[in-house]
Each structure stands twice: as C-alpha cells, then as structure tokens.
Length: 305
Image 1 (tube, one colour):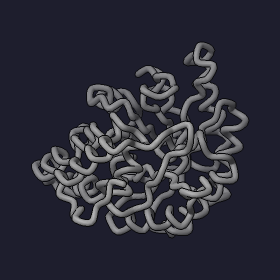
Image 2 (cartoon, helix red, strand yellow):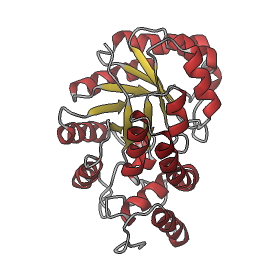
Image 3 (tube, helix red, strand yellow):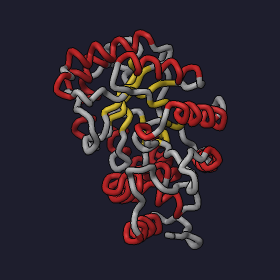
C-alpha cells in the first residue's frame, strides 16, 4: 500500500498544561485548527518536535486520537513510532493503525549505536515494514540529536523494501537530497525536514516536507509548495528566502523551546517544554519575535512573557 505524500506536513508540538504539566489536548486542538486553515497535506505527531521521547504511551495514544479526529479524512496523519527494539516498534505501528494514522515515521534504534550495522538496520526496517499495515517512512533524525546516520547505500536498499514508501531526511543538506533522488527506486518519496531547503529540494525531485517551522509559518511553507506546483519557481524562491532565516534561527538553533515560544507569540498554544528541557529566556523570546515580525506576521498583540 502506498499514499501520495506530496505537500507540506506540520511536525506538530505537544502542548502541556502550565499548572499540572499534563498534556493539553485543548491547546493541541487550537493549534491544529490554525494549521488546517492553510493548505497543508497533513500533520506528523510523535516526532522530534512533538517531544515524543518525553511522552508516556497513554499520552502518545491521546495525541493520535485527538489529531485524527480534528484532521478528518481530507488530511493525512503520520505517527512517529520508532523505538529501540524491533518488537516495540512493531507494537507502536499497530497502535498507530488502530488510532487511524495513515502512515508511520520510524526513526532508527540508536542507543546501542555501535551495534547498529547496516545489515542490522536493514533487518529491523524490513521486519517492521513486513508487519505494519501502514506504509512506513524512514526517519533520518537531525544529527544534532541522539541518533545515527544512514549511508547512501542503505537508503537505496531501504527504498527497495515493500511497504517502505519514503524517507524524512532532516540533515538539511541539498546534496544529500540530490543523491537520494538519483539512487532510490522510482516512486520513493523524499520529504525534507529542514524548512531552509524546501524549494530547491522540490526542484530536485523531493515530494515535500515535514517541517517544524510550519508550526510558526504555515502560510509561507505551503506557499512554497503551491508556487512550485504551479510552475512559479521565482515565487517559491521568494517565499523560501523569507522562511529560511526562521528555520535556521528558531528550529535549527533553539529547537523545541524556540518553536514553542514562537507559538505563544503568534497566539497559539506553545507553552513550556517538558523537563528536562527548559523554556527560552527573555532574550531568546525577543529574538523569535523579531524573526516573526520580519516574516511579515501581524504581531501587534504579541507577548513575550
């Protein structure tokens, strides 16, 4: 089974209640309504931006159910299901299917990094793909996080596995995307994780992006894709020039605290990351505010408390 991943997906955050620290599902719904007012392809939950490693199993299920209900049938729901064991990964894929996800995003097991040879990873992903009722997307996690890096050869081999339909690559390297387009099988869908390179990668043959920066600038991100599909490469490039500084400074340099601060500034539900992550200080929030103002957002009522 395959699905068309062409378009922009929001890599959604997980808002938490400021008093209790519990998952704020009402806040999540507010954010989802905001994303859905733009022509996104869908939403990823349970990814790096969603603080998935800091959520318990019940919270992960709750996020999936709330998001599925809000998206309806017209938008795709991708569930992050990667785990350190093959058994647990397969179980999370089953849960995602039960909750109505359309595809799963599977990060590599990396705790026992030295043991994760290419043959081990190939066996892991093949077994997951064979047992998952949902299409599998391989996740090349940003290298600044605790992960490992897929070789060009391994990605090419994974593209040949039945039910592995694509990859989200968050390395932010245009040359790597060019290589993947050239060396993976026809129809294998490449999604960039860096909002700084969406337009040029679409020109190279990427299908779209799963973007953390789309939390803050869904209009700009979707305009890049729409302009490209309409043949307006200059328009896509202009939008990319606007989006790149926000991705680089907020997502790339500040991470989840920066994205959540930005959501608060634009009137959505950002809040504080879950400990041990910490919120931005006032200087950091001021920088995010400046970047969003430069993007042209109406922030006259913005707060950087």
